[in-house]
Length: 539
Image (cartoon, rainbow, N blue to C red; front, top):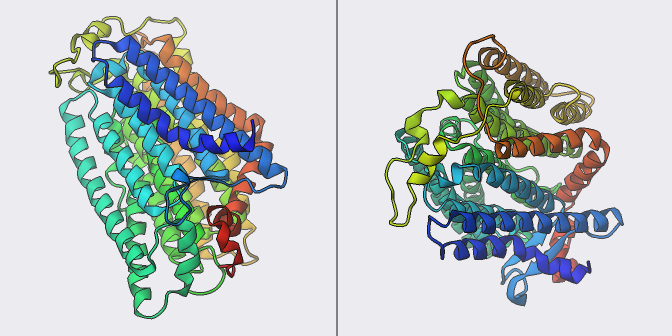
């Protein structure tokens, strides 16, 4: 594929799900098969596009060329027009989103997509928002795509109705509306001082802001950072996350595993681009807040793991621990740690997504019917009988069902705990190796991070062992859980990818190291987005 054609594909991960969701609206809720086919074709096409863009970045980057590519929408030059950017990090996040999109959708086709109206439209718009957030090169469109993915997530969280889901949904909507308001206020203040929201242009301009405008700019950046940290689930801003994810239907919760990583991505992108300099007030601005906030988040998540009395809440606190680990590593701000953190981001997201899919199958017969059952139709064309008919055909009892579920549960537990030889261990080992090698004299904060990483892994092991013994490994006369093959396949695919991270740990870590270096080398990104900026002094 030529470079020019690959460049034109950059906008496809946004346009394709948008067009497919509009097409699906032409069909009624009873035309489930047609909608399933359109959605499945779309997510497979998104996966293929993400693979092409990823391969393009890999081939260009490892050949010594600049792997960053920009797409100027309407051929309007930045910073005046909209620009989409693919680089090491965004290509990785696009591929990760596409994998979760395919596995979550396949799982939902077993019966979950019929648990409520407009599932496919919301699901595809969620993917569009995620892809747009990872591709955009300016803060205003980052806000727009955040709103798209959040609006879709409101509907997906309520998918299936039920009182617990509606209650958690109201909390989720209220908190995220507040976060969006902070995002808008922060972006407005930054634009008012600098006159631009293009990230590359902003990286060139903010270092020269002085005097009274500096306090206003720093306040705007701090408010914007709070909005990102709410989405990343940092303590105490992420208290809503375990309860909210616990009530979502399994494929939605599995896709939500990447939502907190959108906040982490925004911090990685904006923070390292704007504050990666070595001199002036921008050098490592607010770094200590990320480090200490991350440490508090890991501690909160660890306590939550030990106190959780349900698997779904245990998974929610695992998301909190994952976010805290990434925030603390970002606060440390060193290349070697960053590469391990990126490996951890991919490994933990895949593991958590598989974990959410497994939990429902393990707890299936104890599920709350008030949460899982469709109560009343919301639209005239809604087929409320579909799920009720499917409930009697939920699946078949496979003789080795409990063994399969037990093996999958054990794999996820060990992976998330960071036990060898799984990918979670490789990621945590890389982080610890980077932390210990930072300086000759290791600071107390870094020692605290090392301790919390080890303790959080042990807490995960204790919590999952307790739950596994109760649900899977204690002799009982209860019937074996029943499941469908199409529910087991997505879990198997996710775990196989995690297995691949072990087998190809060397090349994967090499990619993460290049990604970390590209995030800290702002020149390539700025030059691609703003070609005329090459004559300006380096930031």
